[in-house]
Image 1: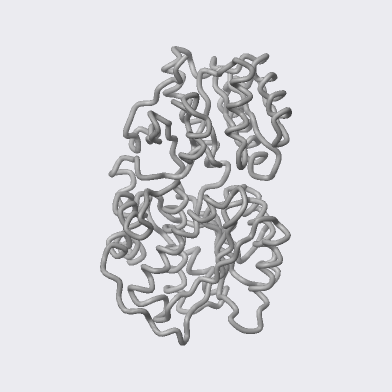
Image 2 (image 1 turned 45 degrees about the vertical axis):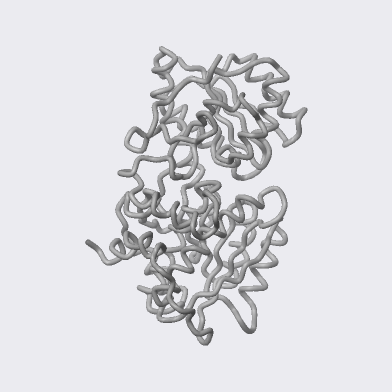
Length: 405
Protein backbone atom coordinates (compact mmCIF):
# COMPACT_ATOMS: atom_id res chain seq x y z
CA UNK A 1 0.00 0.00 0.00
CA UNK A 2 1.44 3.45 -0.92
CA UNK A 3 2.76 5.49 2.01
CA UNK A 4 0.34 8.34 1.24
CA UNK A 5 -2.67 6.06 1.54
CA UNK A 6 -1.39 4.39 4.72
CA UNK A 7 -0.98 7.80 6.34
CA UNK A 8 -4.45 8.99 5.35
CA UNK A 9 -6.22 5.76 6.31
CA UNK A 10 -4.72 6.05 9.78
CA UNK A 11 -5.77 9.67 10.20
CA UNK A 12 -9.19 9.15 11.78
CA UNK A 13 -7.79 6.83 14.43
CA UNK A 14 -5.15 9.44 15.21
CA UNK A 15 -7.82 12.05 15.93
CA UNK A 16 -9.28 9.80 18.62
CA UNK A 17 -5.93 9.25 20.32
CA UNK A 18 -4.95 11.37 23.37
CA UNK A 19 -3.28 14.62 22.36
CA UNK A 20 0.45 14.99 22.89
CA UNK A 21 1.91 18.00 24.71
CA UNK A 22 1.84 21.21 22.69
CA UNK A 23 4.80 21.69 20.38
CA UNK A 24 7.12 24.63 20.82
CA UNK A 25 6.10 27.72 18.92
CA UNK A 26 9.54 28.35 17.44
CA UNK A 27 9.75 27.49 13.76
CA UNK A 28 6.03 26.96 13.29
CA UNK A 29 4.51 26.67 9.82
CA UNK A 30 1.74 29.21 9.27
CA UNK A 31 -1.24 28.77 6.95
CA UNK A 32 -3.87 31.38 6.19
CA UNK A 33 -7.46 30.18 6.69
CA UNK A 34 -9.97 32.39 4.83
CA UNK A 35 -13.64 31.58 5.43
CA UNK A 36 -16.94 33.48 5.84
CA UNK A 37 -17.31 33.32 9.64
CA UNK A 38 -20.02 35.96 9.89
CA UNK A 39 -23.00 36.85 7.71
CA UNK A 40 -25.35 34.45 5.88
CA UNK A 41 -22.66 31.82 5.21
CA UNK A 42 -21.26 31.83 8.75
CA UNK A 43 -22.53 28.40 9.75
CA UNK A 44 -21.05 26.62 6.74
CA UNK A 45 -17.90 28.72 6.92
CA UNK A 46 -17.40 27.74 10.53
CA UNK A 47 -18.10 24.10 9.70
CA UNK A 48 -15.36 24.26 7.08
CA UNK A 49 -12.94 25.80 9.55
CA UNK A 50 -13.71 23.09 12.11
CA UNK A 51 -12.69 20.40 9.64
CA UNK A 52 -9.46 22.24 8.86
CA UNK A 53 -8.87 22.78 12.57
CA UNK A 54 -9.28 19.07 13.31
CA UNK A 55 -6.83 18.11 10.58
CA UNK A 56 -4.33 20.65 11.91
CA UNK A 57 -4.64 19.47 15.51
CA UNK A 58 -4.18 15.89 14.35
CA UNK A 59 -0.99 16.70 12.45
CA UNK A 60 0.38 18.67 15.36
CA UNK A 61 -0.38 15.81 17.77
CA UNK A 62 1.60 13.51 15.46
CA UNK A 63 4.61 15.84 15.29
CA UNK A 64 3.49 18.55 12.89
CA UNK A 65 4.56 18.93 9.27
CA UNK A 66 8.26 18.74 8.44
CA UNK A 67 8.82 18.40 12.16
CA UNK A 68 7.29 21.82 12.83
CA UNK A 69 3.95 22.74 14.43
CA UNK A 70 1.25 24.16 12.17
CA UNK A 71 -0.55 27.36 13.09
CA UNK A 72 -3.69 28.62 11.35
CA UNK A 73 -4.10 32.36 10.76
CA UNK A 74 -7.89 32.57 10.70
CA UNK A 75 -9.56 35.40 8.77
CA UNK A 76 -13.25 36.21 8.38
CA UNK A 77 -13.96 37.13 4.75
CA UNK A 78 -17.53 37.86 3.66
CA UNK A 79 -17.24 39.53 0.24
CA UNK A 80 -14.87 39.21 -2.75
CA UNK A 81 -13.05 42.49 -2.20
CA UNK A 82 -12.35 41.60 1.41
CA UNK A 83 -11.22 38.09 0.42
CA UNK A 84 -8.83 39.46 -2.18
CA UNK A 85 -7.45 42.08 0.19
CA UNK A 86 -6.90 39.57 2.99
CA UNK A 87 -5.17 37.14 0.63
CA UNK A 88 -2.88 39.92 -0.62
CA UNK A 89 -2.10 41.01 2.93
CA UNK A 90 -1.09 37.51 4.01
CA UNK A 91 0.76 36.67 0.80
CA UNK A 92 2.89 39.82 0.88
CA UNK A 93 3.46 40.11 4.63
CA UNK A 94 7.03 41.04 5.55
CA UNK A 95 6.87 38.86 8.67
CA UNK A 96 4.65 35.96 9.77
CA UNK A 97 4.05 35.18 6.09
CA UNK A 98 2.16 31.88 5.70
CA UNK A 99 3.42 29.11 3.43
CA UNK A 100 -0.02 28.75 1.80
CA UNK A 101 -3.65 29.82 2.06
CA UNK A 102 -6.66 27.60 2.78
CA UNK A 103 -10.16 28.65 1.81
CA UNK A 104 -13.03 29.45 1.37
CA UNK A 105 -16.36 27.65 0.80
CA UNK A 106 -17.89 30.39 -1.37
CA UNK A 107 -17.11 30.58 -5.10
CA UNK A 108 -16.89 34.36 -5.35
CA UNK A 109 -14.62 34.54 -2.31
CA UNK A 110 -12.42 31.80 -3.74
CA UNK A 111 -12.11 33.42 -7.17
CA UNK A 112 -10.94 36.69 -5.61
CA UNK A 113 -8.63 35.24 -2.95
CA UNK A 114 -6.99 32.66 -5.21
CA UNK A 115 -6.25 35.31 -7.85
CA UNK A 116 -4.47 37.47 -5.28
CA UNK A 117 -2.50 34.46 -4.06
CA UNK A 118 -1.52 33.44 -7.59
CA UNK A 119 -0.23 36.92 -8.38
CA UNK A 120 1.90 36.74 -5.24
CA UNK A 121 3.18 33.25 -6.09
CA UNK A 122 1.63 31.69 -2.98
CA UNK A 123 -0.08 28.27 -3.04
CA UNK A 124 -3.83 28.44 -2.58
CA UNK A 125 -5.58 25.30 -1.31
CA UNK A 126 -9.34 25.29 -1.86
CA UNK A 127 -11.33 22.91 0.33
CA UNK A 128 -15.01 23.56 -0.44
CA UNK A 129 -15.82 26.03 -3.27
CA UNK A 130 -17.12 24.06 -6.31
CA UNK A 131 -17.37 26.47 -9.29
CA UNK A 132 -15.66 25.00 -12.35
CA UNK A 133 -14.16 28.41 -13.13
CA UNK A 134 -11.92 28.15 -10.06
CA UNK A 135 -9.58 25.67 -11.79
CA UNK A 136 -10.03 26.88 -15.35
CA UNK A 137 -7.82 29.98 -15.21
CA UNK A 138 -4.45 28.32 -15.81
CA UNK A 139 -3.12 29.06 -12.31
CA UNK A 140 0.02 27.17 -11.29
CA UNK A 141 -0.35 27.40 -7.52
CA UNK A 142 -4.07 26.68 -7.08
CA UNK A 143 -5.32 23.26 -5.97
CA UNK A 144 -8.81 22.08 -5.06
CA UNK A 145 -9.63 18.94 -3.06
CA UNK A 146 -13.44 19.06 -3.30
CA UNK A 147 -15.83 18.28 -6.22
CA UNK A 148 -16.60 20.76 -9.00
CA UNK A 149 -20.04 22.04 -9.93
CA UNK A 150 -19.87 19.64 -12.87
CA UNK A 151 -19.41 16.73 -10.47
CA UNK A 152 -22.38 17.81 -8.36
CA UNK A 153 -24.51 18.14 -11.50
CA UNK A 154 -23.49 14.66 -12.63
CA UNK A 155 -24.40 13.17 -9.24
CA UNK A 156 -27.81 14.87 -9.31
CA UNK A 157 -28.64 13.59 -12.78
CA UNK A 158 -27.37 10.10 -12.00
CA UNK A 159 -30.15 9.97 -9.41
CA UNK A 160 -32.69 10.25 -12.24
CA UNK A 161 -32.46 6.49 -12.89
CA UNK A 162 -34.07 5.40 -9.60
CA UNK A 163 -36.39 8.43 -9.68
CA UNK A 164 -37.73 7.50 -13.12
CA UNK A 165 -38.35 4.00 -11.83
CA UNK A 166 -40.41 5.41 -8.97
CA UNK A 167 -42.34 7.56 -11.43
CA UNK A 168 -42.95 4.56 -13.68
CA UNK A 169 -41.47 6.37 -16.67
CA UNK A 170 -38.48 5.90 -18.98
CA UNK A 171 -35.68 8.31 -18.05
CA UNK A 172 -35.97 10.03 -21.43
CA UNK A 173 -39.66 10.83 -20.79
CA UNK A 174 -39.23 12.59 -17.44
CA UNK A 175 -39.71 16.35 -17.85
CA UNK A 176 -36.78 18.10 -16.18
CA UNK A 177 -36.59 21.70 -15.01
CA UNK A 178 -33.40 23.59 -14.11
CA UNK A 179 -33.72 26.43 -11.61
CA UNK A 180 -30.67 28.49 -10.68
CA UNK A 181 -29.66 31.75 -9.07
CA UNK A 182 -27.23 34.32 -10.42
CA UNK A 183 -23.55 33.96 -9.54
CA UNK A 184 -20.64 31.85 -10.81
CA UNK A 185 -21.48 28.74 -8.79
CA UNK A 186 -25.19 28.29 -9.66
CA UNK A 187 -24.62 29.39 -13.25
CA UNK A 188 -21.81 26.86 -13.69
CA UNK A 189 -23.97 24.12 -12.18
CA UNK A 190 -26.89 24.99 -14.47
CA UNK A 191 -24.63 24.93 -17.52
CA UNK A 192 -23.23 21.54 -16.47
CA UNK A 193 -26.74 20.19 -15.91
CA UNK A 194 -27.96 21.33 -19.31
CA UNK A 195 -24.91 19.95 -21.10
CA UNK A 196 -25.30 16.56 -19.45
CA UNK A 197 -29.06 16.50 -20.13
CA UNK A 198 -28.46 17.18 -23.83
CA UNK A 199 -25.66 14.62 -23.99
CA UNK A 200 -27.84 11.91 -22.40
CA UNK A 201 -30.85 12.65 -24.60
CA UNK A 202 -33.04 13.61 -21.63
CA UNK A 203 -36.02 15.96 -21.77
CA UNK A 204 -35.36 19.52 -20.57
CA UNK A 205 -38.73 21.27 -20.29
CA UNK A 206 -37.50 24.60 -18.84
CA UNK A 207 -34.39 26.42 -17.62
CA UNK A 208 -35.23 29.34 -15.34
CA UNK A 209 -32.86 31.77 -13.61
CA UNK A 210 -33.56 34.36 -10.92
CA UNK A 211 -32.07 37.09 -8.78
CA UNK A 212 -32.24 36.16 -5.06
CA UNK A 213 -35.51 37.89 -4.17
CA UNK A 214 -39.02 36.46 -3.66
CA UNK A 215 -40.63 38.00 -6.74
CA UNK A 216 -37.91 36.66 -9.05
CA UNK A 217 -38.10 33.15 -7.60
CA UNK A 218 -41.90 33.17 -7.83
CA UNK A 219 -41.71 34.12 -11.52
CA UNK A 220 -39.23 31.29 -12.13
CA UNK A 221 -41.51 28.80 -10.35
CA UNK A 222 -44.41 29.84 -12.60
CA UNK A 223 -42.28 29.11 -15.67
CA UNK A 224 -41.52 25.63 -14.35
CA UNK A 225 -45.19 25.07 -13.59
CA UNK A 226 -46.26 26.08 -17.10
CA UNK A 227 -43.60 23.75 -18.51
CA UNK A 228 -45.00 20.92 -16.32
CA UNK A 229 -41.59 20.02 -14.94
CA UNK A 230 -41.77 16.74 -13.03
CA UNK A 231 -38.26 16.82 -11.55
CA UNK A 232 -36.71 20.19 -10.65
CA UNK A 233 -32.96 20.57 -10.18
CA UNK A 234 -32.11 23.66 -8.13
CA UNK A 235 -28.72 25.36 -7.76
CA UNK A 236 -28.82 28.37 -5.45
CA UNK A 237 -27.01 30.23 -2.69
CA UNK A 238 -27.71 31.19 0.90
CA UNK A 239 -31.40 31.24 1.80
CA UNK A 240 -32.58 30.46 -1.75
CA UNK A 241 -33.97 27.06 -0.71
CA UNK A 242 -36.28 28.62 1.86
CA UNK A 243 -37.44 31.26 -0.64
CA UNK A 244 -38.10 28.57 -3.25
CA UNK A 245 -40.29 26.49 -0.95
CA UNK A 246 -42.28 29.56 0.05
CA UNK A 247 -42.86 30.30 -3.63
CA UNK A 248 -43.95 26.71 -4.27
CA UNK A 249 -46.40 26.87 -1.37
CA UNK A 250 -47.75 30.22 -2.54
CA UNK A 251 -48.25 28.85 -6.05
CA UNK A 252 -49.84 25.64 -4.78
CA UNK A 253 -47.70 23.61 -7.16
CA UNK A 254 -45.10 20.93 -6.48
CA UNK A 255 -42.90 18.88 -8.83
CA UNK A 256 -42.85 15.14 -8.21
CA UNK A 257 -39.24 15.45 -7.03
CA UNK A 258 -36.86 18.30 -6.21
CA UNK A 259 -33.08 17.92 -6.11
CA UNK A 260 -31.14 20.70 -4.39
CA UNK A 261 -27.49 20.94 -5.39
CA UNK A 262 -25.12 21.93 -2.61
CA UNK A 263 -25.74 25.18 -0.77
CA UNK A 264 -27.87 25.06 2.35
CA UNK A 265 -30.07 22.12 1.34
CA UNK A 266 -28.11 19.82 3.64
CA UNK A 267 -28.60 21.98 6.77
CA UNK A 268 -31.05 21.08 9.53
CA UNK A 269 -31.73 24.83 9.88
CA UNK A 270 -33.09 24.87 6.32
CA UNK A 271 -35.27 21.82 6.94
CA UNK A 272 -36.67 23.42 10.09
CA UNK A 273 -37.31 26.74 8.35
CA UNK A 274 -39.23 25.05 5.52
CA UNK A 275 -41.12 22.59 7.71
CA UNK A 276 -42.95 19.40 6.64
CA UNK A 277 -42.83 20.36 2.95
CA UNK A 278 -39.10 19.57 2.99
CA UNK A 279 -39.78 15.84 3.46
CA UNK A 280 -38.27 13.69 0.67
CA UNK A 281 -36.29 16.61 -0.80
CA UNK A 282 -33.15 15.26 -2.46
CA UNK A 283 -29.72 16.84 -2.03
CA UNK A 284 -26.61 16.37 -4.18
CA UNK A 285 -23.80 17.29 -1.84
CA UNK A 286 -20.76 16.21 0.14
CA UNK A 287 -20.75 12.89 2.05
CA UNK A 288 -21.89 12.96 5.68
CA UNK A 289 -22.23 10.34 8.45
CA UNK A 290 -25.51 8.78 7.25
CA UNK A 291 -23.71 6.73 4.61
CA UNK A 292 -22.77 3.08 4.04
CA UNK A 293 -19.59 2.24 6.01
CA UNK A 294 -18.07 0.45 3.02
CA UNK A 295 -18.28 3.63 0.95
CA UNK A 296 -16.79 5.95 3.58
CA UNK A 297 -14.88 3.68 5.99
CA UNK A 298 -13.57 6.49 8.19
CA UNK A 299 -16.71 8.64 8.41
CA UNK A 300 -18.04 7.15 11.66
CA UNK A 301 -14.68 7.70 13.34
CA UNK A 302 -14.50 11.28 12.11
CA UNK A 303 -18.06 11.99 13.30
CA UNK A 304 -17.17 10.64 16.74
CA UNK A 305 -13.98 12.74 16.86
CA UNK A 306 -16.01 15.80 15.83
CA UNK A 307 -18.54 15.11 18.59
CA UNK A 308 -15.78 14.89 21.19
CA UNK A 309 -14.04 18.02 19.94
CA UNK A 310 -17.07 20.31 19.64
CA UNK A 311 -19.71 18.69 21.85
CA UNK A 312 -22.22 18.53 18.99
CA UNK A 313 -23.07 16.61 15.83
CA UNK A 314 -21.66 17.57 12.44
CA UNK A 315 -23.80 20.27 10.84
CA UNK A 316 -22.95 19.34 7.23
CA UNK A 317 -20.46 17.32 5.20
CA UNK A 318 -18.22 20.36 4.84
CA UNK A 319 -16.25 19.60 8.00
CA UNK A 320 -15.33 16.10 6.80
CA UNK A 321 -14.51 17.45 3.31
CA UNK A 322 -12.20 20.13 4.69
CA UNK A 323 -10.60 17.69 7.12
CA UNK A 324 -9.81 15.24 4.31
CA UNK A 325 -8.62 17.97 1.96
CA UNK A 326 -6.36 19.56 4.56
CA UNK A 327 -4.75 16.20 5.38
CA UNK A 328 -4.03 15.69 1.70
CA UNK A 329 -2.23 19.01 1.46
CA UNK A 330 -0.33 18.57 4.73
CA UNK A 331 0.83 15.16 3.53
CA UNK A 332 1.94 16.65 0.19
CA UNK A 333 3.94 19.33 1.98
CA UNK A 334 5.60 16.65 4.11
CA UNK A 335 6.55 14.68 0.99
CA UNK A 336 7.75 17.85 -0.75
CA UNK A 337 10.34 18.29 1.99
CA UNK A 338 9.82 22.05 2.01
CA UNK A 339 7.35 24.84 1.31
CA UNK A 340 8.82 26.06 -1.97
CA UNK A 341 5.78 26.36 -4.33
CA UNK A 342 7.25 24.34 -7.22
CA UNK A 343 8.13 21.44 -4.92
CA UNK A 344 4.71 21.55 -3.29
CA UNK A 345 3.02 21.51 -6.72
CA UNK A 346 5.03 18.48 -7.77
CA UNK A 347 4.11 16.65 -4.56
CA UNK A 348 0.40 17.44 -4.92
CA UNK A 349 0.36 16.28 -8.55
CA UNK A 350 2.08 13.05 -7.45
CA UNK A 351 -0.63 12.30 -4.86
CA UNK A 352 -2.42 9.03 -5.55
CA UNK A 353 -5.09 7.85 -3.09
CA UNK A 354 -7.66 5.34 -4.32
CA UNK A 355 -11.38 6.02 -3.95
CA UNK A 356 -12.58 5.13 -0.43
CA UNK A 357 -9.08 5.94 0.83
CA UNK A 358 -10.15 9.07 2.75
CA UNK A 359 -12.49 9.24 5.73
CA UNK A 360 -15.46 10.53 3.68
CA UNK A 361 -15.06 8.04 0.83
CA UNK A 362 -13.02 10.24 -1.48
CA UNK A 363 -9.71 9.44 -3.09
CA UNK A 364 -7.18 11.87 -4.52
CA UNK A 365 -5.58 12.35 -7.91
CA UNK A 366 -4.96 15.91 -9.10
CA UNK A 367 -4.89 16.94 -12.76
CA UNK A 368 -2.65 19.65 -14.22
CA UNK A 369 -5.26 22.30 -13.39
CA UNK A 370 -5.06 21.35 -9.71
CA UNK A 371 -8.45 19.61 -9.53
CA UNK A 372 -8.94 16.45 -7.48
CA UNK A 373 -10.51 13.91 -9.84
CA UNK A 374 -11.58 11.51 -7.08
CA UNK A 375 -13.83 13.72 -4.95
CA UNK A 376 -17.21 11.98 -5.00
CA UNK A 377 -20.52 13.77 -4.34
CA UNK A 378 -23.50 11.68 -3.23
CA UNK A 379 -27.27 12.15 -3.25
CA UNK A 380 -29.12 12.31 0.06
CA UNK A 381 -32.79 12.60 1.01
CA UNK A 382 -34.58 14.26 3.92
CA UNK A 383 -36.57 11.64 5.81
CA UNK A 384 -38.30 12.58 9.09
CA UNK A 385 -35.70 15.18 9.98
CA UNK A 386 -32.66 13.11 8.95
CA UNK A 387 -30.60 13.37 5.80
CA UNK A 388 -29.92 9.82 4.54
CA UNK A 389 -27.69 8.83 1.64
CA UNK A 390 -29.80 7.21 -1.10
CA UNK A 391 -27.50 7.20 -4.16
CA UNK A 392 -25.27 5.71 -5.50
CA UNK A 393 -26.35 2.24 -4.44
CA UNK A 394 -23.00 1.39 -2.81
CA UNK A 395 -23.28 4.46 -0.57
CA UNK A 396 -27.01 4.24 0.20
CA UNK A 397 -28.48 3.49 3.62
CA UNK A 398 -32.11 3.87 2.47
CA UNK A 399 -34.09 3.59 -0.77
CA UNK A 400 -35.02 6.72 -2.71
CA UNK A 401 -38.67 7.78 -2.37
CA UNK A 402 -40.93 10.27 -4.14
CA UNK A 403 -42.13 13.26 -2.13
CA UNK A 404 -45.58 12.86 -0.55
CA UNK A 405 -48.45 14.18 -2.72
